[in-house]
Length: 241
Image 1 (tube, rainbow, N blue to C red):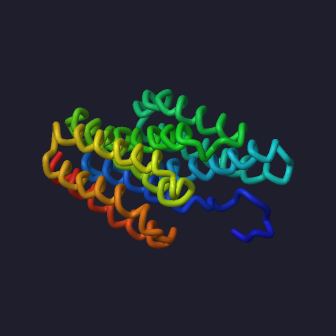
Image 2 (cartoon, rainbow, N blue to C red; image 1 turned 135 degrees about the vertical axis):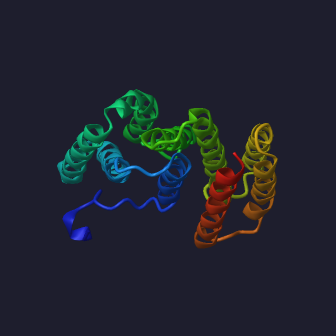
């Protein structure tokens, strides 16, 4: 949409697209496609647009010019939510699980602290949950597998929060760099318990977390690397988990 329509219409957080698409795609592919995935996909993406617009509105101290996209995307989210539940009413049981990460994210935006680590990790929790919801919406019989896939998505994107922060906003901060490496090591240890091949991928991600922030990579280079890493983690987890 045009900038002339005002702020909040088009999210500018480019890293969010992978965090939206990957958990959803993994859940759909693992659980099997169903018609309900069509409105669910719309709900997921438009819901993020509503979240982004609301965060911007709260950060701007509720100034009226920020309200139109909140109203429009909020209404669209409601309609898509009702359409999703009309096709698969049992999905309503998952809705309460999103309240805490959603609340943390909006509270952080209202306090203008949306770039802090807690807010980023809360967003990742909500993102990972979509893997389970998308899986449960299909014919997949093994919800235990869905939770492991969701855990994988959470661990990967949580590591990404640390990694990108260490390479951009905290570049040169050695303490944060090693906190990022430590987070990746913990994630590697967790996935080793259920997928050695996936653990190997996380070893590579850990090495990346230790080396790349020192090299002065540009945001574009980091973004391309994230696309590749996201695809690798998704494919390996689908094949081996």
